Amino acid sequence: MAGTIINPILPGFNPDPSFLRVGEDYYIATSTFEWFPGVQIHHSRDLVHWELIAHPLQRLSQLNMTGNINSGGIWAPCLSYDEGTYYLIYTDVKSRRGAFKDTHNYLVTAKDIRGPWSDPVYLNSSGFDPSLFHDEDGRKWLLNMLWDFRKGRNAFAGILLQEYSVEARQLIGPVYNIFKGTALGLTEGPHLYKRNGYYYLMTAEGGTQYEHAVTVARAKSITGPYETDPAGPMLTSKGHPELPLQKAGHGSLVETHTGEWYLAHLCGRPAAARYCILGRETALQRCGWTEDGWLRLADGGNAPSVEVQAPAIPAAPVKPIPEKDDFDESELSLHWNTLRLPPDPSWLSLTARTGYLRLSGRESMSSLHAQSLVARRQQSFHFEAETAVEFEPEHFQQMAGLILYYDTDDYVYLRLTHLEGVGKVLGIIQSIAGQYDELLDEEVVVEGNERCYLKAVVHRERLQFHYSLDGEAWKNVGPAIGIRHLSDDYADLIRFTGNFVGVCVQDLAGTRKHADFDYFRYKEL
Image (tube, rainbow, N blue to C red):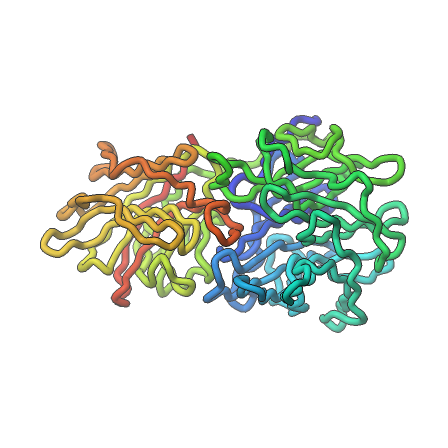
């Protein structure tokens, strides 16, 4: 009873947590951006042990991200529950460069958290980070930040509030701008709560990098006026580079069934310098209320802690994730992801050859439309990933292998291809900020070998590739490679995901040459 929560509770790319309790079950929904399926939902019974249980957005009728920009797609979902129905609100970001952002907000519902979830109801497009508040009188209210693209204006122009009608399946009534934010700026990520006669508005401010924060304001009326906590942000890592958990912000609050309060929030852990290769993660902090009704961290101050006292709930361990996937099932496990679109039998099959994942090559690593790539999150600073691939390329436009992938601009790829006059070869492709390179002076000849084993070993910001022809004797491929570019923090344009590792196939001639992968092993070291 009352053990210790070790942060982050959801390591690797799991940002923008929405925290929900239903009875004695606890759920956290997180953003997935351009990765499919949309939205991750983790479940816990004790706040210490967490298990991935669902992806609500699994069908093209719910989510079609073809052509979505890098770090577009699903932003900041909000999970809520009322009278037997789960509600999920989310943004599908279609564009975000320059002055404009095309941000469409939707609602899906389900009777069971594991689904099936409904097709979406369109809500609005005025800004991102929507959430749904269920008031005590039965009315429901949508909140989202307002994006103002005009020159000389504050782009983060406030938090909008509008009523949602379940019967009409649409927003109704006037739109209120209830909160313009504090001097921290970049006000977003709104969540609304009600306690002791006050409406509490929790927002993310300061931007989702190293000045990120959670701020709280309150009002007697849902439409305001809202007064900001005079103590300033209740959570932030700003100004404390020594803290293990950086970027703390974007909070979501829950009262446990034992009457204790916890805040789920976003954080980042630099692998080197200020480079968070694992992306933005989710942590929990224990909270309490002051006598005059303001939310505070239980241990004082406003800095996030790695170790946090767990609630007075019996321990409820979950099954560990298997290190090895032998591809023996007819469907991919919950931990695999594809880019922008769901798996389609035309390019991915687990039944064409029993015990193998068959991928048919499509577009390049630069494509925003049709990549044949299957990957999982990197969730540890130290890991190795291994696969065995059978592939017979006929020319240089056909490639297959093991990839570490951030987005279309940044990846490192150990790939098999065909070299004229030589045959099948193994080499390394790298892209840094969109600049293509090949890292071997001479590629490794593997002609005549039906199967090739590939391995990546990562220690913080360093990657070493290996290969084997028998699965036992391993040789290095190329030098150790710096992978700081596989992080949110490397590019000039702010990005929001994290590093993935997986397998992929390309056929740039359009003939759909396939490769068979016998297994994939991800092991934390």
